[in-house]
Length: 478
Ligand code: FAD
Ligand code: NAD
Image (cartoon, rainbow, N blue to C red; front, side):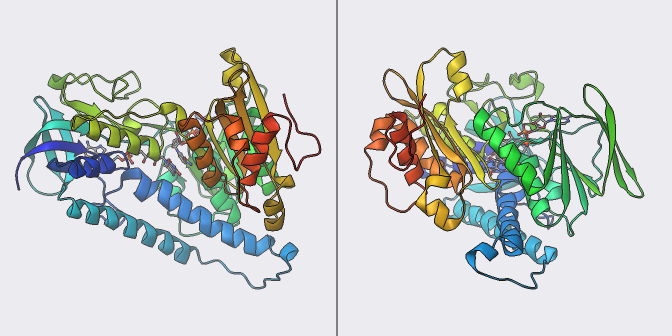
């Protein structure tokens, strides 16, 4: 094993492993140092996303949705289903198998690209040297021409609700329970709270979400967030806004959660509690002081637009730096940095990164919200189309939600697209492409969409921007 590489990547999540592969594709010698240990105690690639984030949560969302549909959604299709039973252990095993296959897939890709996988913790030293503390064995030092820091993020802990690994857990713990809690509390009604709340609600738990903010999903379109709140409450997610948790105490009966709003205090007793109040960058002890790696006050690695840190030839990407904590954002930064190291010109379009919440219905958006446009004083036009007017959505009996397109009043350029509905996570890709290609709403309106598809709602929303939607009696237009 050499100890000198063209590039060393610290962290093998979707930012780091993608950067490593792209560097190898471009002909560089690459090592990737990663500290993750899988549930079997063995080193595993893929970081939070593959091991404890995107993939296991989506596996459980899919399985729990099937169970929920079989339980209550089939009569209207003329299908009677009796004797549906739940095997949580089998569901978890299926999720674990998906994670196993995908993380081993990354290991195979590393092998194919001759990327050296170094299992252990890495620390940046001066002169692009990295000290490796392996899970077992002696510390050693490796060096490179360029270092990419991709150490990701970890859950924020609350001192008033200490984790105990089983009754009070973070998102990772809640992806691994072996049975369904009867009463589940969740602190935080953000993305994780809603997705994991949906999983356990579908499997039979009574779910209460305590959210400190008065506004539900402040980052999403106001109209969609309002409809989503109503829908989720109807589904049985008891979302309580403006509630601050003061203490959570584990007792013989479960967990007593004390919380208060501006006027009064309450106590909630649940069997288990998830703390889902955001994530923070994983940068503690990442760099020796002599390196002069600059972090901001929250611990994010300071980078410029090109992901260059304060240390020459050291880059940082993914959740450890500014911007949305999303896997695809980190991966694109990884590709761009690899290409810049290779001397190419490469760019990340931060204005065209989609956000998705994988509830039912899903919520997805890209670009600007109406609030942001108003604040910036931008004149815009709106086109709306509800899935209730979509033939395919009606055939699927999935009529909740709508597509909203915002376009510049003067140029008609698409500035933002907001979707709530079945398969919004897939539909939003069309909107991302529209933004990427600087499309106008007229470009989408003049595009021929296959019939009958959910995508036609995008077409109709684009027509509605100009007040000429075909399948709505009167196009809603502002
Ligand atoms: P990470 O994936 O966190 O990987 C960082 C890696 O670096 C880890 O393996 C870590 O062990 C390692 N590391 C840290 N410090 C060191 C060190 N000093 N030395 C060596 N190794 C180190 N995003 C989406 O886009 N879509 C989703 O559907 C989605 N669902 C999610 C669901 C959940 C429950 C959670 C928790 C997150 C979800 N996310 C989702 C967010 C997504 O997981 C992150 O944005 C993404 O994983 C960030 O990638 P990353 O490579 O920057 O960091
Ligand atoms: P989040 O920021 O989405 O939500 C956290 C919520 O907790 C916020 O609404 C916040 O107001 C609330 N909160 C904070 N402190 C509180 C307190 N003391 N009491 C009550 N509520 C409190 O964060 P998250 O849901 O933990 O997710 C973390 C990150 O992971 C997000 O940035 C997200 O982008 C990413 N993620 C993405 C996906 C996806 O893309 N589908 C899924 C899961 C996670």
